[in-house]
Length: 145
Ligand SMILES: [Zn+2]
Image (cartoon, rainbow, N blue to C red; front, side):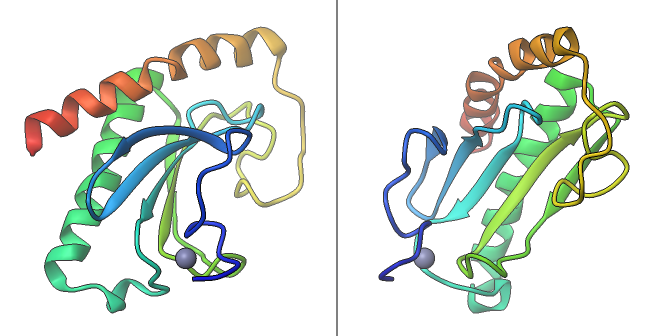
């Protein structure tokens, strides 16, 4: 669809492609405050989960859970946030976000106001851990499909 950022090519400044299948793709989201932030995007333009068939929904959610599972193993977050809003970009996508008690928004959502600064050394450690995610996610997908 014209003017839809998720129908368009991924811009390098937005993130890195981790995996791409026929129906979905998984990317890392460049956000210096939230290392490990990933997004699972339906490849074709559709705005609501109920626009997909049951098997498509299952496939998409399985990939969301692969990312959640991998984030838990690799990053050991306090919590994983799963979110599908689509108010700004009405094209099906799921945010999978590792959350920590010292992240800049916790316990608010990542769209809330910043309430603190995370220590730089902590962010650096998390960024290093997050660099393991692409290979770990691809490895888990290869075992499932
Ligand atoms: Zn779209």
